[in-house]
Amino acid sequence: MRYIEVKLGGKELIEKGVATLDKLAQVIDTTKMNSPSFKMVFTAVGGLAYQRDDGVIVCLIGRLHP
Image (cartoon, rainbow, N blue to C red; front, side, top):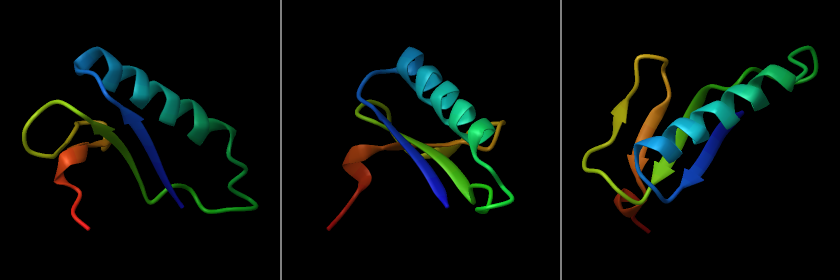
C-alpha cells in the first residue's frame, strides 16, 4: 500500500497534502490491509526530491519519466 497526493502549488499545498495523507493513514483498518510502505506528495514546483523529517517524500512531478 502506498499513499500519494498530488498538489500543484508550493510549500503551503505540500503541507495540506501531507495532512491529507496523515488523515487517510489514520482511518485505514490495518487488521485488513497493510500500513502504507511510504507517503509521497507530488508537486509542480521545486527542485530535487527529498524526504521530510516525518518520512513523507516530496517529489517534483516533472521528475516522472515514461
